[in-house]
Length: 325
Ligand SMILES: [Zn+2]
Image (cartoon, rainbow, N blue to C red; front, side, top):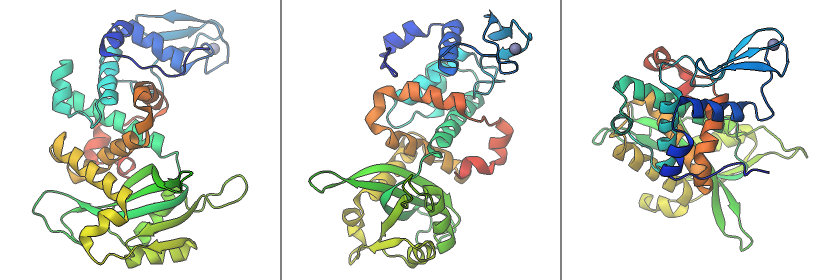
């Protein structure tokens, strides 16, 4: 039984994926682990046209592209370049800047590298959108935006971001962070928070019929109270006598928020409001897989295979689906 995921050094990666053909072969194995099956007639014998990366069904002659239905489809970028970008995005702990990636991989157009990175971020967001948070969840809101702009709830110049981290207890009763989600919202109102709770899995139940998301812990801002009341959830408030102590009382959510701010300031030198959600989704995707760092490349390929792709037009228009879960 081969190992499901494997770790590769840069040298190993280079050896395993030297050209388009090797990448296409790998992609085929990932998409059809039990062998190719024609999507039209279900027949399992086909000719493979390697130059065009196409399967030609022996029964009905239907042609299936290796990349159809993946984020790689319809792009002019060779598969091997995609693989390199994915490798870099998977290996870099904080996320590579597009300019850096363009330079490293010798991609001629900045726009090409930018669009590739966004397609991958979209795949990450789609993957995480399948997961709910369970148990007790630490939650807070924060403001993302350029330095010097107005702060505070109700501020119009910074983006409001809701952040949630699920917690679990070990045998000693100590709390540890599980999964994190962040969402850009219009404001920190009860309605926004209720929408976020729904996104996190509020209302979903386990097989046994128990509520998945049971309680939240916050700084006691009244909108959280309103939302949990409507949703019939428990709400634990930590009392903040000194606002600077928030990091101690809600440690995990604050760690995730400050990490996100550092990443956005550092590797991306700030992010426009329109694309903020995509970057936050990438940061959460990494955080949620922090114990599987070595498997990130394989996991990322899987995410790219099953993702709906986005076009440059969608991104420029700021399609809603990439901003919200
Ligand atoms: Zn067929």
